[in-house]
Length: 206
Image (cartoon, rainbow, N blue to C red):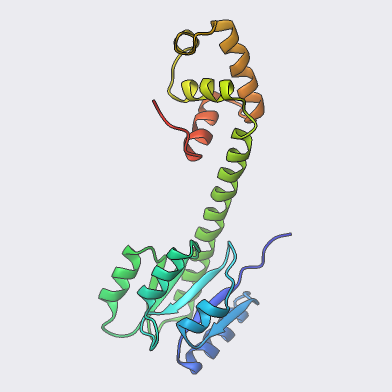
């Protein structure tokens, strides 16, 4: 089932929350989670991969930067769009440096906000896809024997069969057999695909 993204809104101004919710729902985002404080959001919300957060940078309990830091501490990878008032651009820039996907200034135009949300959701979907691919690669790596893993590391390092055979004290023919098994278990159609998968999963280069 395709995950229906939830757009979280954190703003202590009830009128802003209500208008944003109406705007987003009219733009085709039915799943909205609105919170009047940063702590309320952090205590009650359960963001999922593919969601997005609209976050007011100035909040009475925790500001936007503190919320970002807490999300990072919890390893919650959620694209954040920081909403700023007049004169808060320097804070928004700091938020961007800390990983925010975008910032918009109040009062904002409807189309600008919707475009920003769509970009953030696209970023979130891509991040989720990459994460799932890496998880699958790690799962496949775990099916390799110790020897196959050694051969894989030699392949990723770009070593020819003769060098791998010499390093491991086995015959080139045995290396060929292990290479074929590695390619099959990793479901890699080419050496370049195997290298990309392996590096993404953290296989060391030599």
